[in-house]
Image (cartoon, rainbow, N blue to C red; front, side, top):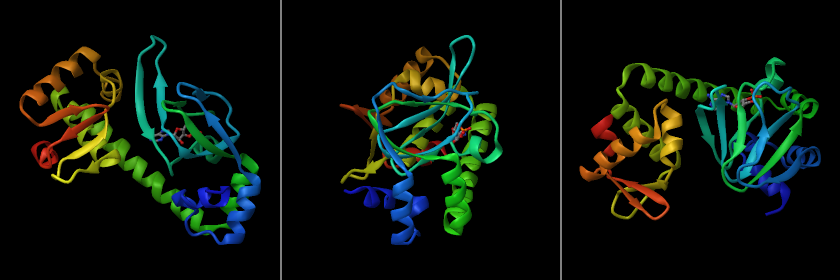
Length: 224
Ligand code: CMP
């Protein structure tokens, strides 16, 4: 795929004309970030907006004591780094590539020009920011209202929804996150997650198959 075709795969650019995609492509810089590379740290000044072409980016907050809270795992077609450009505050979180990733970046001034010139991008951006706020609200209520067993189940439902593909037999398969990653999404320890997952596996609700976790078709209903 050439650069312009790749830009079309980013949903916020879906409505742009060929001419607008071509001018965007001249402003954008494409770069590879190997697994475990930090794209930027929380509290840094930020001058770039990023879009993911390939790979996965973890958006995370690191505590002084080394503990981590994962806010989101973003994948191909997603964007990040817009907040510092919109409110002129430092980065609100750290972004780290958790797989070999390819990103496209736009400088602050170009991002602002593109937003001013294309109402469709502004609307798409607002829609996605609203979805992120809904998701964050759900995370807050999960942390406040569910016990740790419920939180583990909730995060599995979320991953199945966000990243899952349906198998022929109706079950849903998705990338198997590490127990530490799950723990960092729900504010608990790796040991607790290991215990809870074993329990769910014993009940036949989840299975590990190679690099994937597979859940029963009715898994959501059991926990929703
Ligand atoms: P910025 O503050 O510039 O840098 C960190 C980025 O992480 C932020 O922009 C958003 O793009 C992204 N981000 C922050 N909080 C969340 C969240 N709750 N869900 C998804 N992405 C987020």
